[in-house]
Image (cartoon, rainbow, N blue to C red; front, side):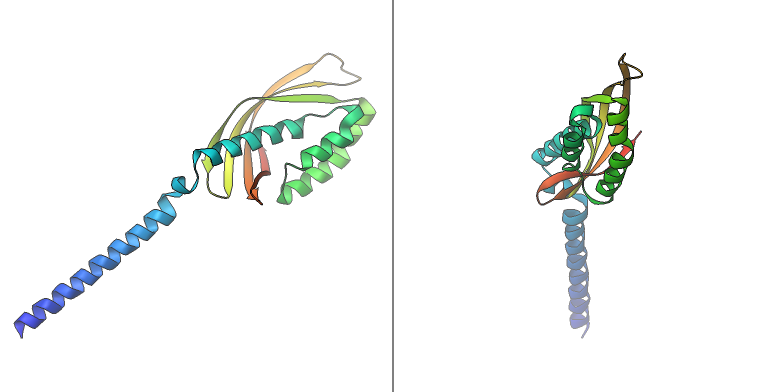
Length: 164
């Protein structure tokens, strides 16, 4: 009888150890190894999308403002697309037309801050030059932005644009 009791305890201990090991493997693969699911190509694609989208959002000219703002919207998704649509119609478009505001942005540097299979955050450093009818001399500014991206139909789109 004592031999059976000893085997039963051993069997339970082995089952508990196997279940614990299985749980640990599942958690490791699904929770802690997202870097395996996101390769270097995904990271570089997200950085490129954030950089191109940032330039599109911050660059427009009075004579092409409609086209410029429409092109910028193709880089956006979700609530940020709705916000930018309203902001561009109510603020950017009138300013560009009425005061001849021209802005040109360039990305100095960008790097992924956080990357997942379907979302990413990219830190973007931007230089921007602005002129207008009232201020024809170029005003230059430098800023940094945390660009949040969401993958939609295989394409990285900007879902938030937060100046830092």
